[in-house]
Length: 315
Image 1 (cartoon, rainbow, N blue to C red):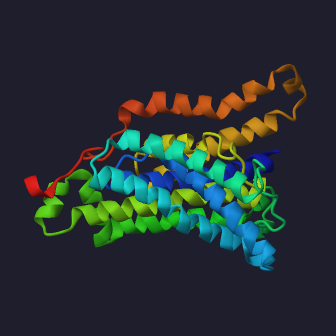
Image 2 (cartoon, rainbow, N blue to C red):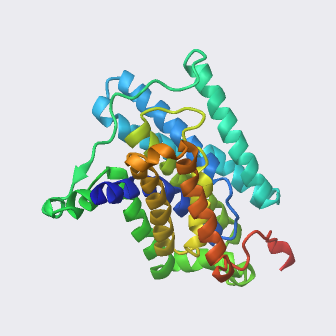
């Protein structure tokens, strides 16, 4: 059971981690990103559609990768809307993110019905990602299969954590990106284009977050429907706050919430669980999220310029 809990935690945490890393990237640049839920919905939709049409075109074994790429590329439609609304037209960041969530949910639901003759979900994929084992390490008793036998998307998510850590703390671009979230005026004075950095940070944040939705479709669900994401984007936002806008902290936050979801599934198979309403178990991940924010909320501080509009003409 221990191995199942650890393995399940990684599977659930992967989708949350992609969403959280995307949200963190945008907010590091000073743009509040409550649109993570919408980006994950978009990623789930485009990955399902992209993989399905790749299958019908005879590219079966490559279809999951095509679906993942489709999610990354086409979600830029929604992240571009958020970038334009908040940066060019100075819209309220929170309202823009909420609108993105509503828009993505309803547009994708409409497109599913349009593409598949009124059916409310995409056809089930025949080809999905399979678990890959790391040689030697996967043979370790108990933890071997739990930690080192997982889906390619899990390894990719951990790679993105390392990449963003290096970007933020070891490169001049990362220093500039953090700077526009803390003191954009100082960055602008140095002759650096603040708005360009913010724009590409928001664009890339949506694409990274979309991989969370794609992960759910291409590893476990196998198709897309209106409730595929079911609020996981909001848990990802909580992981950003819990992780204090740091890639390593965000990873730990995602693992915590992934553990809560895994525990929910494992507890339900125990004998005593039959006397407890099923709805109680579905509350567990959200309850853990709420408690985590309550106990850590006072100690967190986001980027100083987070949510503010910057106008270079009045500096």
